[in-house]
Image (cartoon, rainbow, N blue to C red; front, top):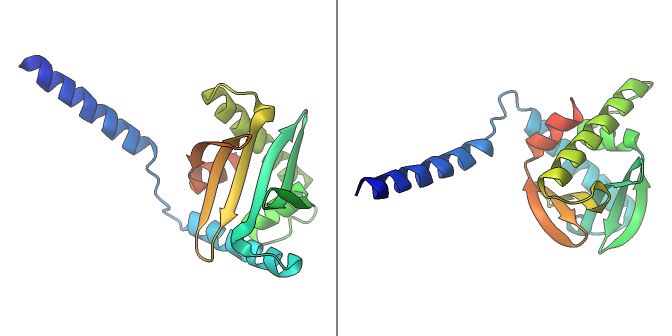
Length: 163
């Protein structure tokens, strides 16, 4: 009987631990601001390309030593994005003259992708971080090729971009 209770408690403890790991609080409203900026960027991109916003995907991936960012529509590349434009996607402002900021963002992306690929036991070159948006919501997802491996909270991505 004691063993049953102990197993139940450890199961509950494990569930609570998993729930708390994914818990995040947007105390200063930063995540909601970034969400609005991303939605604004996707809307602008949709108008520029004359493509449906919900079908656009911003993919971040590493090719050898280089971080690449590109917009895709239904699996086809639409436009390559510079790191500077990626910063604009998140901040809604031009990072004029801030080369250090670009280097910092690249370092943050590399660290995040390295951690995520290690966690899933895949090569970092196989990993893609995809950002998709509807009219009012943003999703960030990790993929190995075409296989979805993890949903990524936007706050986690923001944290790594700003490390």
